[in-house]
Image 1 (cartoon, rainbow, N blue to C red):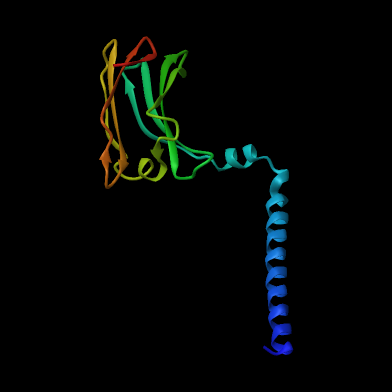
Image 2: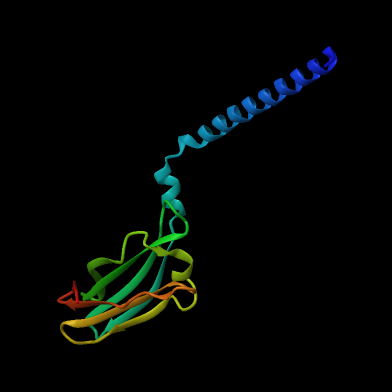
Length: 157
């Protein structure tokens, strides 16, 4: 091989190595550029929540289901079941439980059409409560989960 070709080949390798090194350097610089903002600040600002169901039991209790988008994974969500009791003309939260696992649901099916497959309550004491939610359109609904609401507290049913 001629010395001219060897020289060109060496320059191409050197350029590729230089380009790769520069790319890694820039990635490192850009990666640390946003390091001043804490990840808690950015994740808290990005977290969304949406009430997906609500029921008022007589004039005493209100029960809500709320989907909370995961701060770590935009596709994951947690579902909270909240119980409120009427007190002094306002609703006061008396209990909160997580339905299923933390970040155990998918955000988009939970916040879209048909997200709540079953949400049944009764105005009795204790009040039975059944919840079934859409896992995904292709999987369908979750198995129903039964709870009892007694004196403003939620118990497994």
